Length: 152
Image 1 (tube, rainbow, N blue to C red):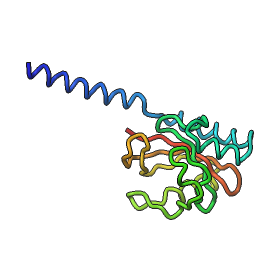
Image 2: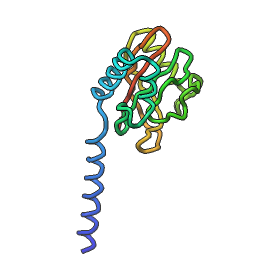
Image 3: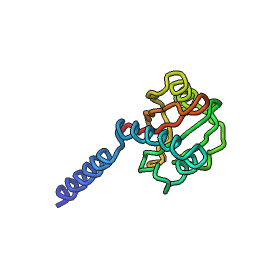
Image 4: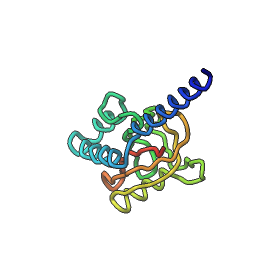
């Protein structure tokens, strides 16, 4: 009987792990989220769009997917996972590997127009530091917006 309970426990844990993987966001979803966000900025203007991005009910937060925008200096203009950091400069914030993700995001978006950046960042769904891959897009000469997914 103990063996059956142990086997059931292992099976439940495996099912939960598979369920978590199945619900994890994909690169395509992150890219589409970022593209939709930039289109929204162009449609309704910066002020309304950034307010929408920073509200959980604004249509730009879905599980571990959220939109963020920042200016060229690293000041957060919108953030779906943590609206409390809007207005703060994160340009000097390092990830656990010593990299400056916000500087890299700006460089990718402003220099190339769009692209992917990999770094380590807190996952709002788990509150743990995780590998994140973000797709960032240039909105104008001073602003980028993006979204990313967390690797399992």
